[in-house]
Amino acid sequence: MNAVAVGLPKIPREDWTAHPRFRSQALLLGSHANFRRVSRYLVDKAAREEFVGLHSLFDRWIAAMRSHEAYEERKLYPYLEYRWRVSLNEARTGHSELHARADEVTEAFRSLARPVDPADPSDPTTDNAVLRALQAHDRTLDAHLDVEEEAVIPLLLALDPKEFDRYYRSPLSMLIPASSTSSR
Image 1 (cartoon, one colour):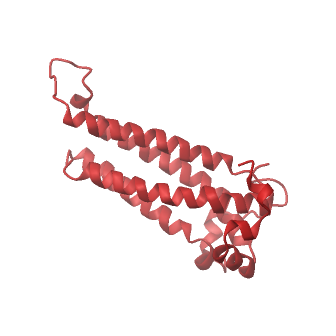
Image 2 (cartoon, rainbow, N blue to C red):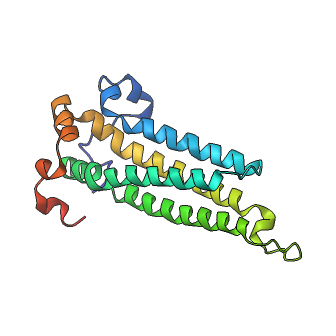
Image 3 (cartoon, helix red, strand yellow):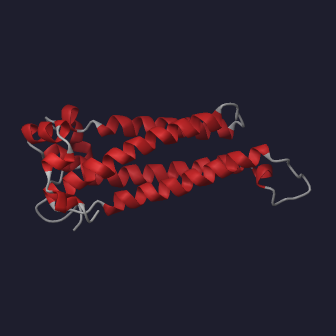
């Protein structure tokens, strides 16, 4: 199963904002826009070698993103997969890839605390490992959010407002049978 199977809602990205349910049923796009803004801010600061407070900001931002991911993986994806009989595994894989890139960024920040060896050309602190790691994370984030939005937003917009309201207000256990989520 995939999110472009026959019979599934197909709403082109350029038509989303004109959809009558866009403002009420595509709320996650606001979070995604903020994630993109923070990512670009981090890359810009690293490019200018302005590292004071950057590691702390990165850690707090990642914590916020992980909370968002938990909601997606524990409620949003299972519900949409059950409701539309699709697989959102590509989006889940994107989360795993983001975690790997975040680990690389964290390691690059740690490298800043190590003594620099100017005689060692392979020393990661001599060629801005933080910038490269943040750029890789930014590219992975953009790719993941594009995939996720293309898969999820049309499905959310296609929900009847009453169904969306029920989804929004109810725990997953009230929305789908327990056996449907046990294999995820």
